[in-house]
Length: 180
View 1 (cartoon, rainbow, N blue to C red):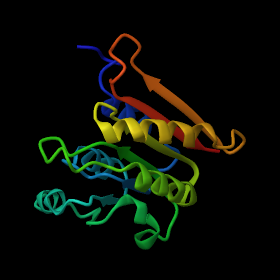
View 2: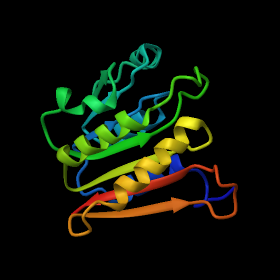
View 3: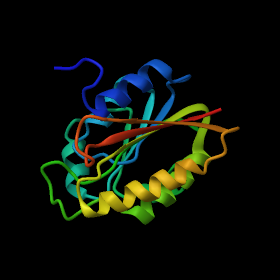
View 4: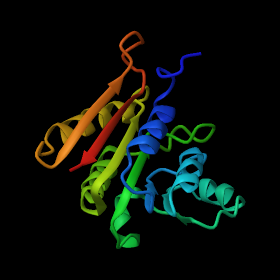
């Protein structure tokens, strides 16, 4: 087992834990099975966690974690629910592992969400995007997200791409955006 070159979710956790400036408010844009929300709730004072699937929300509600606000809505609607600056936003794009693979994040809503994230992320904040391109919508998201981050002004945002070089071209990758 690799210690650094493991999986993009673990890498995003490491980066957030070691490079976040503040640990007040975080957002999990895609609750899914709740692993990122668990990580964020253990490291931040308050966590907003979004998912369009009621089953993901219901499953996580059973954990009864006090600092997590569960929102059964798309991440494109951040600004409906969040009216404060946040220190971290995590995206784990694709589909719910173990769920219906026909229900995926969508290119258009992801781009809208990323636009919103730039408005709510505080200075020094981090946005991590784990992108899975092994399905049709994931390939569309890959192109759109890469285009989006390539066009962010370098005076305001630092953007880094972490990808596997010795795996097939469908392996997931991680994008990290840091706001200056």
